[in-house]
Length: 64
Image (tube, rainbow, N blue to C red; front, side):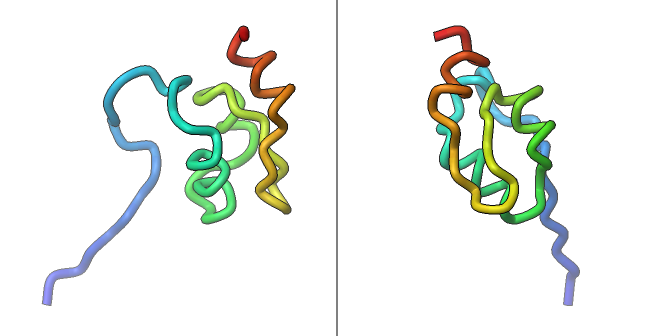
């Protein structure tokens, strides 16, 4: 049987800052990404313990 490895930070398509914040939060909760990476790469501010997206903080990071 072949082994399967699943990792985060793949190439993806499009602007990372257009990714849905809830999906980024899910990646943080699943351990694929830390909260600092979520902010730096995706412009999403997320609580690493609860997975709650800070909507106002995310809007500020994304320049909305």
